[in-house]
Length: 161
Image (cartoon, rainbow, N blue to C red; front, side):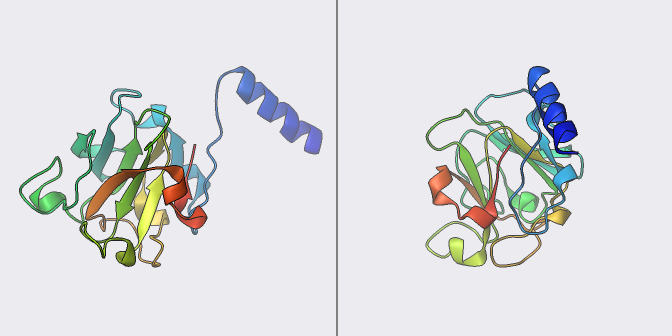
């Protein structure tokens, strides 16, 4: 059985395919996908969020941070707050290439409300299987996001491709 699994991994690598690795609490492995499954533009330095599962109903995208998805400034505004069911990190690799999604709006208490970090090249097609570090379900609960380094996220909150 070990030889079969190894051979399959070698075959996937040869074909240029990757198998996503998830490290979030109770996250179904089938829901974390390589970016090609949801990416409208490939790697372009942006973070995307959608209202519905399977990357449907685009809420918005941005190259920057947005400390409050419910206010009237930034890429995400008004009803975008607490509305995301799918997210994707189309960021470039290196430096601040991880997106930290927060349960609360930005500021000194944002981390206290819990967070979930998504590595570059990863799309989460359905957030219902993921939780923030505080235990809250991530679906329809994102209020802000920020680009951080991988060291800025705790291991149990980091999902990489």
